[in-house]
Image 1 (cartoon, rainbow, N blue to C red):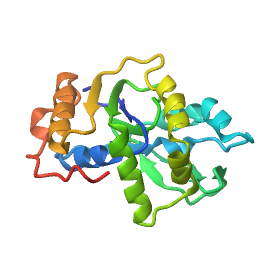
Image 2: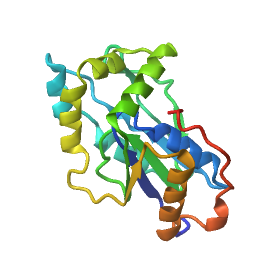
Image 3: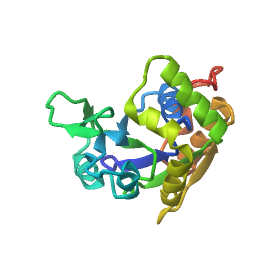
Length: 213
């Protein structure tokens, strides 16, 4: 990898597919490799539609803003927007999360980020995804968005599925129903194959709990 080259890897898939947990597991099992993880939902636009489904059908992510943030040089910092999922609007706050640009940038999103270098699609069965979302709600992490997902599951699946692989070439499809160690191994092989990471950068994986998300 060139010294100042940044590589953007997009992990995408439906809500509850296990994207965030896979990314955390990958980060923990890398040795001396700094990764910037960006939650794409922070770049959602404020909903201005009366019909929420129309909002989801629209271009409801501000990808250009995210791209401008990622255009910064390695080592520079940027502040991600603050999004209120109960009011479903972006708030004007100056105390958002500050991230630093690293050589490897991972975007965590439901639909693909159109400017990524590599795409990893986390494909998980509806049954497991629903179970994970309900598990989050039981833990007290209830918000309007998750409640809406459960009430409008079929309609949302149809909208998101139409955008999942639109105009992109997927580099790796991960079966989210499989164990974390199995999937991390597949991701490791892809990163080594693409000369993004050295094999010695990976730790020996310990037992991972596939029920986490």
